[in-house]
Length: 624
Image (cartoon, rainbow, N blue to C red):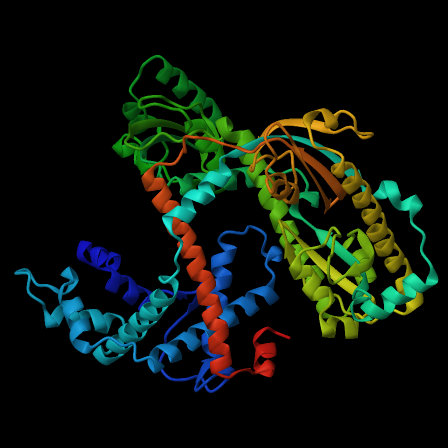
């Protein structure tokens, strides 16, 4: 086992693990290698293809991986998932063909040499064992030729990938300059001109609106919308009755089973039957309290055959006592060896018990856990009721009931959202899974109630109506949007004009206080300051100030316009990074540049090899 783990940690072992045991991860995409080409193609890439089964396997694998990191499955955007997986499979196929075209391959001798070095294939004397190698292949359902072919293919891809990514150049001098930029600081004064303050000065004509409409008509579209009726259910909204003692007992039994602990107590009994059983039991209990032997009294007084052996009935088994098990267990709870119970009325008569031996682990009593067990029993009942209600609503939806009828029949509050949007959805149901179902073609056409959609810790059912598809807006419909856009643009231009006029008059620190607006001092800040927006941080260090002077910079920003004034830029003399940290920073930068180069190379390969996607098979695979 240790040899196998060591092998899988080596680079050929990792390749084999990727190929045979888990989804292949290349360029962030998972797929399995399998025999033969799937005739149902998703995409034709040059002379190769991406098969339907390969695609579905990759999607399922990637989905499972994401859902391990995301608690709410409704947040997963299935359309984006399918798009990314397909792109990755096509990218891989492009690189495979290019590697072959460039003659990037690995010889059998090289693969043989690498495998012979692996401990997993060596015998006790340290020599390569054909028997162990054959067993390894047999366990994975592979032939030697298949293994060599997959190794060769993967190593060829690694060569091509390394030749692209590894060529990224970013010299240490540039790294040092980049780090030095992060060490810069200067004193900053700031004033923001909000565009809303200039709206009253804006004048718009019909010609302005018409001109904007004519220039941007293709982008002025209505959002796809429906009116949405929905039901939302979660376990927390379910009201349940108080739990019974039997349900608490069931939770206690489940708790004990979860501990994997059995009751190892051995007990003895004295059983009294007949009309005078109660009186006899009380007298015997009194004699026991005075110290008489339990075994002797059982032999002399018990009406059960076990009395012949001193009342021994072996290990405590609740099932023997049927409906009386809880009462007997309660009486025995907490008893040590030699302790005796009070007489207990059961279906057998009156019984007195003693513990003769206890080799088991101590289990908390039911009473000591009552609050916890009661809460668990109530939650269990709540989940049962919730599951039954979800099933009932799903059945009604499948039978074609309207959402109003379902709400009334199942006593669930019906809620509505008017103008529910497909894009830029900011509603309480903005999860991609809900949006996908609400705008499903068949759901809209039939105005049907969807099956339950899991959202967070609950379930949602939706019924869309009044579908309005995306379409180009008329001038009249687009006018409010155009008016808002033009007002903001023109107001921003006025704000920027004033900011630039003030900037032109600021040359020295003394000029700052002379301005008609309040330039707020931020003190000394660096490029990481949170006092400035991202764009403002770039502006703040874009120009150097003259000695004993300041520089004023005016620019359009997110809020309208910003006037920034800064003194001389200063750089720390001592870098906080060691030589090793600088080298690590350079490696990260080069890797990022290499990934950019790889994407550029893939774009080139798309020009070199024709890529055709089978939209019909894609739609079927996505359930559309």
